[in-house]
Every structure is written in C-alpha cells, then in structure tokens.
Image (tube, rainbow, N blue to C red; front, top):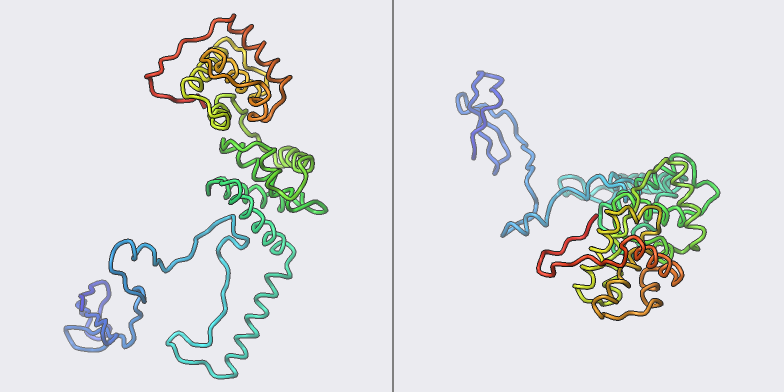
Length: 315
C-alpha cells in the first residue's frame, strides 16, 4: 500500500488517503471511509524480469508515422470479451461483429485511404529493397501525401509517384541513391519515374540540394574494389579542382569517375575506362571529357596525399 496526498476525503476533509492495490480500494486513514471501491491498475499485465524485457513489452503502439496509411491511429474492433474478461452475450457479439464489418468497409471504401494503403505497401517494399533508413522512408511518405493532397496522382500511376517520392527524399536528405537504382526497384519504367519526379519538383516546389561529386567517390570505389590510397587521392583531386572552380556545371558522377580514373593511373591501381564508367553509371565519353577537363584545371599537377591522416570526404 502507498500513501497519496493529492486528494482529500469528501467526509472529513482529510488528505491522508491510502490506496490498496490488492483490494482495489482507496480509504481515508483519518475517518476510515471508503472513497473508491474499484481502482484501475494502470500497470502492465505482463511480467518482466530485466530491463530489456520491460522495454520490449511496451503497451503503446508504433506511434504517429507518415509511412502507415492511417498514420498509426487505426481503430481496432475485435474480441468477444468485455474489459473485465467476461464473455459477451450472443446479441452483443452480433452487434460488435457488425460494427467491425462497417468499420472495415468505411476504411476500404474511401478513395483516399485505399490509395494510401496501396502506396504505403509499395513504399515498404521499395524501402526494404533499397535499404533506406527510416527518416528517408518517412520523408518519402510525407512527399507522397502532399502530392495526393494536391490531386497530382489522379489519372497517373501510384507506383511511379512512390518511386519519385523516394528519390526526392533521398535527394533532400543527401542519401546516395541514383534515379536508375530507384527506377530499377520500381515496377514502372525509368522514363516514367523520371517524368513523375520532374512533375513533383515543379508542382510541390521542392528544392533539392545540388549533388557534389565527393559523395559519389566512396560508392564507386567500393564497386571497383580500389585501394584506400587511390580513393583518398581521388577526393584530393576533386578538392583541388573545386578550389580552382573547375567543378561547376558538370555531372557529379562523371567528375567522380574521372577523378578515380586519374587516381588509379597515379597509384598504378589500374582500371579500364569502361569498368569505371559502368560503376559510376555514366558513359566512357563523359568520363574522358571530364578527365580532360580535370587535367586542364589542375595543369597536370596532382595534389599530394598524406596517407596517414584520417580519411574524411567532403559533403
């Protein structure tokens, strides 16, 4: 039993109220009057033997999330027992089944809700396939909801809007996922996803940050399997070219591929242009053009790299 001094006794005005969690009563310790006969137990109905079990068995749901079609605030009608565990009579069970049926119909019959249900299922599938973090998934769901509110999806493909929303979220949060990778994971064609993305950018006034070539170097280097000194030198080449204003207006993937090709030649970590271009998702012509441009900017003077210094790319 524990003492509670927040309330007072309605008979004597005493403030020493005792709550008995065993009998479910709240009693005044001064006059003995029973104030409440049934006290609700707000504690968990399970047993936890350590902190991890207690954290894993929270009573709350998933919380408010845009990536769930009803934002995690759904109504669930089920069961054939009341709050005290007693079985409901036949008439009450029939009424509850009817309420459950009407509730399910009201959710499915709404066009807006049905659209979100299909779209969020596709968003879950693509996010899992692309290995996207939760913040990107939530941002993509928010962008899709905005496009649905603006009535942009009428007469267009839901899957294409989901894919373009994912790519827009990746651009906004600076997560390196190229459009080709996103459209490959989608059920729609690359041209349709690209067209839908341009529509989203224009109609929703989304201003994604400009991609820098530095952030593409680690992914391309990982695909090629080059050595770490080569990757460091490629970043230093881009840094030096950036200081001389030689990166403006160029394709960032082509610049990253050209810098890696230049670094591979310098460190004798040989890679052919075709392999580097395929890893970067660009063409050999673009790689050669960017390579010549970097050589002109640097005047054939490559920067020196301290291989013992900690490795950090420029964002």
